[in-house]
Length: 465
Ligand SMILES: CC(C)[C@H](C(=O)O)[C@@H](O)C(=O)O
Ligand code: SF4
Image 1 (spheres, rainbow, N blue to C red):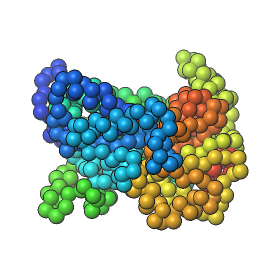
Image 2 (cartoon, rainbow, N blue to C red):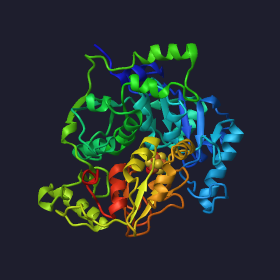
Image 3 (cartoon, protein in one colour):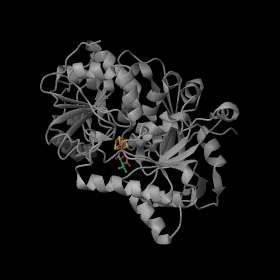
Image 4 (cartoon, helix red, strand yellow):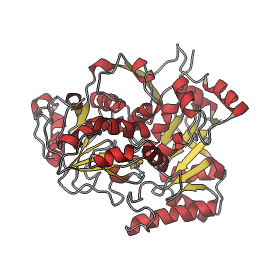
């Protein structure tokens, strides 16, 4: 019987396997950031052991960094401390750091791919749930906890039970104004925020194949928001073309060898998945969430479910969620006034996202009472945006182009949405308090967010293009 892509990679990395026990899996690349690494380094220090293979770990500062005046000391004491710890720990243990001021600094899930560190066939971990992003390259990539970060630093391996396999096929052609963000929000709204719990997902089908690498990353990024351990897409010509020539990508003979291996990375025709789901791209319209988990989403022209449409047992949490959002069951969202727009995060802060937004807003003006934050995912994205004149287009529209970091994706730095305000956000989580205490989040695509920036309201972008 054939093998799934996931099994090919996982099995190829097993160092030890014993029935009833987790597998010991070799890790090719380990990313770390300031939030989940301090205790791991402390652990090593206590045990008086070094990092086993320091060259296999890369560090960046992203969660706690301000996105204005990055050349100045960090104002928030806790954030400053976290970033200083990362600097100290990486220096002491010999790990490469892309800290503030470094031309490679940025959100961990943006920099790995853009530097050619993330490659097909790899096992990749990071103490961060959205590590699933790297699966877009046909890698087995997943988030781990702080004690596991210590385990990987110490051994370059991790103990893990093998997850089950799910395939999600999206066939057909996407409609105008519908982006990969809409595909993944749609899937999560259909299967719920826990619909893939316990599974590792492979996305397939012609609608997925037709996507650029950056659009594929958006999909894999949000796998975790339906409970999946990770998400992946088999590498193809699009993948290889994206990687070629990047800073740390293999070159010359090493490239040819790598390519020959990468071309074997697909699920065999007779491979068995534990679950297979099918969707039609033509059914997907621009999406928006109305609640406080990413599964509470709908097409932008639809209405929030009425209580009568729900299972009785869902009603209490649904009501709590809508209370938090100050929204009514059964109401539409189109036309709803918004206060903030955040275009950024490891889901949608890459150069293609910024290009799309700039193309759309060129010659338009943001609504007067809306604050618009555009936060590039990395220094390289920022530099590219400037080289292409995107910065000017955005500033002329009244948008703020800030410096790279996680920013308003989560309230761990200075960028917070004020209490009670509505923010339409291209990030991946709309949990209570996620963007700041009592802030209210609508998740959407960069185009839908840009449309709202112009009108000041939840808008169907298809009416403006
Ligand atoms: C802070 C970090 C551990 C966390 C994660 O694991 O995802 C963050 O990146 C997030 O998006 O909530
Ligand atoms: S951008 Fe948001 S989701 Fe991504 S790593 Fe940072 S905090 Fe997590």
